[in-house]
Picture 1 (cartoon, rainbow, N blue to C red):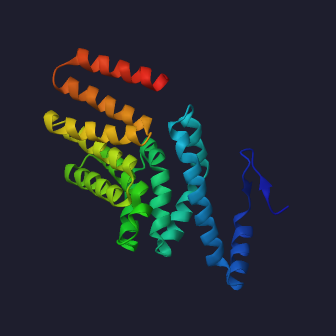
Picture 2: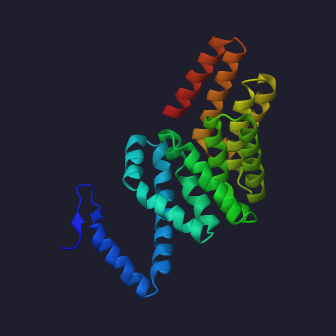
Length: 239
């Protein structure tokens, strides 16, 4: 057989066979169409796996993406070549938690920067998940100006798209960052973001806001209050 079934369920082929098949596709003028199909499949797969990062076994989701990381990178590369910014925003946005957990921050942010260059006027609704991803990833890179810009852009794009959950997420990230130097200024942003997420049924990010509030209490020298806030958040999440 030209294909081998791997223990993980994937099919593998020899590089010589792959190169031969790619040549035949090119001769038939079908390379672009097949690559577009692959990009579309990766985008659907990434969107389907995104909720699993916040589920009961996020490690399994990370391992699943590890298995398909070559597919992800190939799809992003092909989308970039076709200037398909919508696919790039979608794929990186769906896999933001994976890139965050695995420390692939620069790679993910580079893909998002290229998406913006490819189509800066793209419909906000098609950018919104990727913009929130850029804000989240920027919090770990730690460059203040870039972080604030990413959060504010994510907020504005979410507002333009009418996406209250993602607007709330951007406000929570911005407020949490601000509390490191200005607790009084950061708290209202966190509270506003929490309200938006709770209204949209985004309970996990509402809980994230509560954790950020707890950290703010620590900064204020009120550890007992912080512990009480975190205990309350844990009860809510368990429910």
